[in-house]
Length: 486
Image (cartoon, rainbow, N blue to C red; front, side):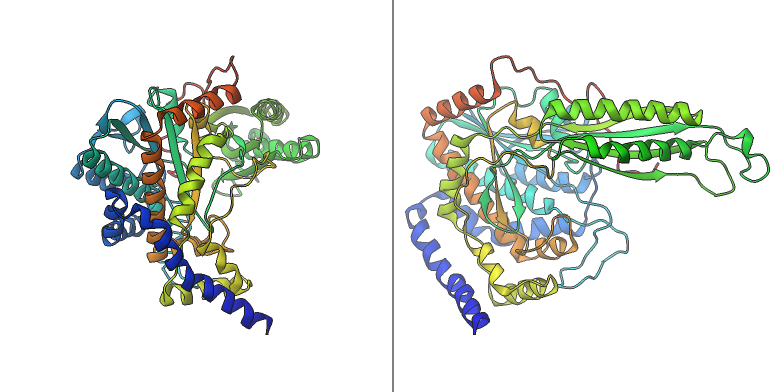
């Protein structure tokens, strides 16, 4: 009986939500931006699926970036490509004068997550790439919103500029950090950001700052059975470092995180390896704690090298700030997300979602989260979790983020379930909703420059008067080959 009531409740939400959405959007009927998006579902469905079908890893997203750039050019944007020494990065601009509103766009995939659009595990290519974080939706949703805003600017004759920041390699490469470092956000008044999720809501957490470091150990090769005393194992250096790091975990701040893998550990057991590499992700909610933790691990690496008579060379791959929250801007996104509403499944989509949920061991009632919008929560201090290069942007210009339900509620991040759903019309509905939130929010800001002033004032107060931006990756060039096997 309880399950029947639960199903009726969910069905009622799915049936009622379109009516509610119609009422909420009635006021927007004559809004050319919203009308454009309502008429462009097939266009953006096709565009996101092209990117989904060709999942490209960080800094290698040649075709994905080109698709987005070409679409923006076709709609009157001026596109500057290959910016900040990143071949797949771009900045697309439409309009003139102030205010200047930025929109972030990502399009990189993840390794090892190949999956068909079916509700059970079925890789399209064993070990292949897949959009487990939904960046096939991310970039397209951002671009759809920007084009919709451009239609409104042209139709209204309103002054203002919209900029799309095509930023590659969010998954470990930190493309946005290079855009920040090279000054591409100078003159931008606010930045709007989104990400596919398993629900609909505005982000209120700070996440974690992160330092990504590869430790390269160098030793001497020798026959591991015939003359091992002649060798010095680089792998011993790696293992000694890892052992010390695992001991120090007891003494780090509670919400800090350390993870590592050994991509290079030698070629054969009977050869003492003269080279080995371990890749570390070091995270903490505060950059001060992150800096101290990084220095401790660097010292451990030197000790490991000394103890194994090897040599170690640390290489910073990337580093991101934690996010700086802006309540005023978050409230703008919340108002407009509530106007747009959640993602409404049709019968086919609902059956697909139910199969995913069943496989996760969840109850169907969880699907209500796709159709509804969470209230704006209080700002939440970080208790660990993920990191994003959006953090660096948020300390440079007022930034706020939101999510729409491109994934099935209950799905884990970076999962095959995400790849399966974001390559379907469920993902397309989520990105169209995101485009609408961008359009409505930008229009509100273009029409209320006093509100932009309040947003900036809050930003300056939170950031503090003596803030100076110093990228955690220093002056290194973009790690364009970080996804290539070494």
